[in-house]
Length: 142
Image 1 (cartoon, rainbow, N blue to C red):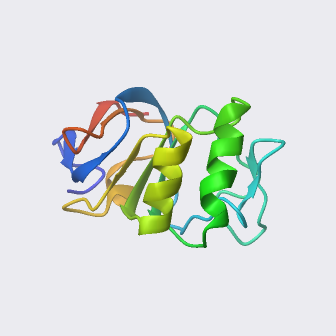
Image 2: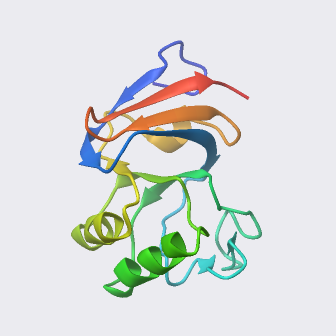
């Protein structure tokens, strides 16, 4: 599905967490909670990241692939405990460490879509993430 496509439901693999709705923040870039974020200010801080300077708090992050190690789990948990986390994490490819971190942090996670989710959704779109069904629904396009 392309961003211009008429289909509003993207099918992924069943994920982790509860259903959430919110504004998407999208980039075809990889994601590390440890190296990409300023967890105190709620912004992407790595200068090389395509979302550098963007606020991620209460957004549905839609990115390419998880990267990083075991520190992601406690970093996600710490961010969520201070209400400084995203509403959900949507990836083309998550790794087991990111899945463990999302579960530990009670952060909804969805991945393994039939098509590149970063091309199908745009920043500012309103989306609903339903991990149990493995779906992302585009409610409103920006």
